[in-house]
Image 1 (cartoon, rainbow, N blue to C red):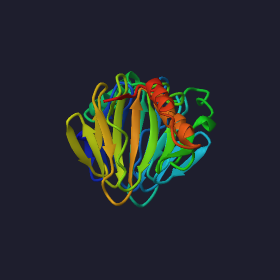
Image 2 (image 1 turned 90 degrees about the vertical axis):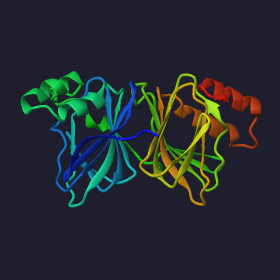
Image 3 (image 1 turned 90 degrees about the horizontal axis):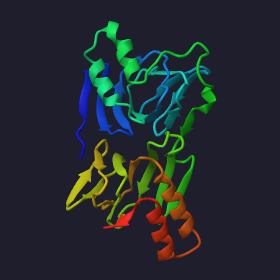
Image 4 (image 1 turned 30 degrees about the vertical axis):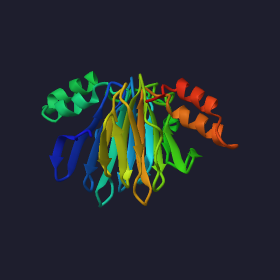
Length: 284
């Protein structure tokens, strides 16, 4: 299990690092009523993504303000000016995914102890810049999805596609995965080149990690490095829902091909094995 690293802990704002890879950095934030994030800015080299866990989140773009509710994912491409805040009278909690990671975990740690006069220089080092004079790219390129926007179902499993490798600059793929009650999970397997990370949203997920077993509850994170035998299952009598991050991206296409392969009847083992091999999956 990946323990959170607290960066900011004030009544009006709590921020912690939940995952830090070269391909993607994830922070979790809780903003109190009226709390504002950074001023409008752009990233030139990476996408800025958000997944709202609780409350309402306001994303400010050049075409206006957009209220984003729980269970909604937003991807802001490079060079699109944006800012965010909590306009509600209640708290909001959200994940912020930077992909590629550009060392954003180091940025949030360093900026917490930096005086105002050095913050702009520090931000620029980590790919955060004021909007260009022309205002940046058209905000219509911003992606907004939920787990119901683009889905497939395989053996009772519901998979909602949130971000593809193409959208995340090749650095990650992101799906929201719902495992039904009693789901035995996939066979133990290994990825030789792909990191696999789980953020639990609801229920409980059992992760096989080598020879160990981990029970993950909502808000907990597990990270599986390449070359590690792993699997997961849901032993409870209710569904388990989680975000599944693969880095680098591309693995999300595995779910589409698998769903298509089993859509018309019992799967052909040779076809399934071919799909697995294309997406860096080897049986343990």
